[in-house]
Length: 120
Length: 120
DNA sequence: ATACTTAGTTACGCTATAATAACCACGGGA
DNA sequence: TCCCGTGGTTATTATAGCGTAACTAAGTAT
Image (cartoon, rainbow over all chains, first blue to last red; front, side, top):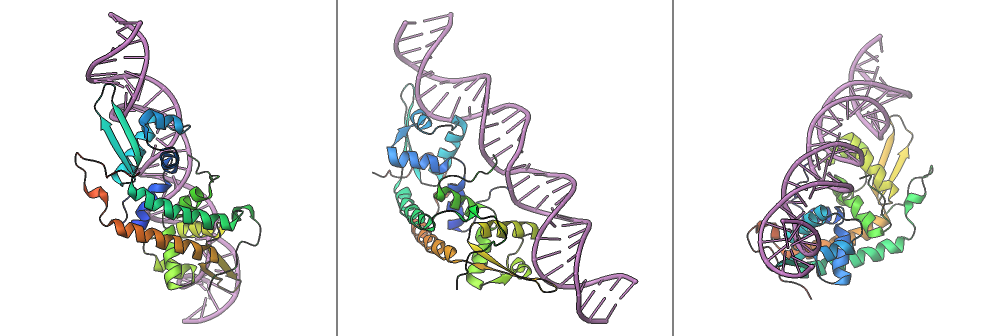
């Protein structure tokens, strides 16, 4: 599947956030403030320059991250989160609350009985 | 990458919801009520039996969908959403609200100026 | 002259996973 | 006797995209 941009905005946002490193990048920028490329790279253990650049490009396109390029030598490029990302942070907070409420993952019970009590 | 189950609960949930057909399945069950396998399959245009079965298995494991098996001939298997899914629906509602607020996607502006105004 | 810095880009192999299609058991009906 | 419907499973193929690594420009410092 050629990773389409779905018509549904929810689908699109979730698709972006699920890609590798995206949450790490946003978390790093969100909790430790704006950073230059290589600074950000060293904040995020294990990420490669290729993927960091690619994900930042994606996040910038989507409006979750801004990019500030200063044409110095060597160049100074600063990344940070946008207002739009602040909106998302609230939603993620909600999500974390409910996920935490569930406690232990159901994954830990791979037995015969496979279901939780139904809703409605 | 062998699709690991991340330690972070948010990461895990987002990973599940981003997989192909998952939102379609949950939407179909949520808006049109519980359904049998083949019924569900015809509600969701384009999905294959293989992926529908696999995604249902995943969603059941994660506790978002329940599965009720009746040993008739032919078998009767009913799927529906759980309480846990109801929690998520609220979060998705939030997400939709903010996404809608943004209006048109930023994607529509691939010019020189690539950034939105910064936050903080 | 050569090395060093930043902020990436390019090339390449590998593999996880989606798409498609064929197949299965079970008993009932024609 | 053969086919049908249900609820899947299995095999095969194709490809998106991740990981690794090497390379780049442009100026400054040694």
